[in-house]
Image (cartoon, rainbow, N blue to C red; front, top):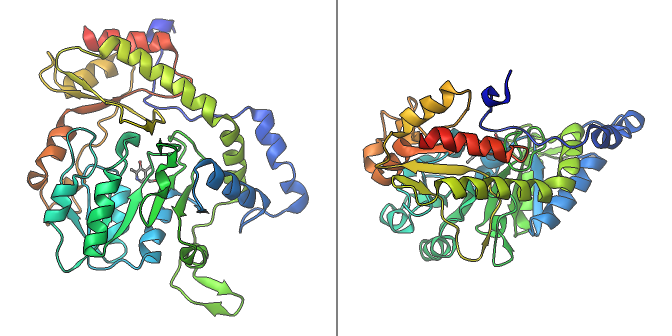
Length: 367
Ligand SMILES: *Cc1c(COP(=O)(O)O)cnc(C)c1O
């Protein structure tokens, strides 16, 4: 196959050097301790809390379980205000806990929940806000905190996209009552599958630890209706290896994003993500909004596909248009989110993406 026709997927998992991973898992053959909070698990928990600048952090088998259990640990009930411009997980975690999602619209600037729309939707049944740091863009954290304080609501962030993001040196995951992280294979940082809940109040430590282990408190006490969401030692080993390289990986992503910008910035009909003041970015995604470009989003996606290049309508469809929700909700109620979902395309972005491939992808888009 010639280089010009090389297939490029929208993402590709970061892999640590094989020898490093082999070295990391070798002790498991002596200890035969494979899961249930082993040595690698403990070590990763400590190192991640430090890296992400959070007081407390607990690991989970995946991000979705972490989010479901965070909703449960915070004791949410009634209505939870959230965004339809996210991955299925965000709303499902609310519904699977017996709560009712209420969809507020997003901001055009950064695709995150619009605090003004949130405030309009608060009723006496509202117990929490569940915003998403979309593409690593930080939500309006101060405004949301203000609103939550005023109305006595909890704030639980879906920070699946915000690994390593900071605002003026403060870790993104330290905002709100708790924040969920995903370490899925496709994310900036991964543990194959994996996730975490970060929080600042030690009161949540025991309940979250128990929830991921069937609600078992000790040998003779089962205090909560928990599940099984423990991260195993092989996942933790992958996480420890990847953590050593994540800064270099993010730097490589930055270079890829810069190259995209060189080609696409200022092109009429294309809108790129804008940086937020004081925010350290993680270059998780490269979304482009096609509005008034010579081709629409779907035509560009098809043109890339024809050349063997993957891209993703992320997020499309909106959650309030899903088959399982659309009888009770409508994307007409969230027009900005609808506008974005119909026009946004995320381009291939991973640390090992060659800059020449970025050039080629841009040539296809612009021709
Ligand atoms: C990836 C993702 C999740 C789910 O995380 P998993 O680790 O795959 O369970 C939730 N929300 C958002 C916004 C995500 O991107």
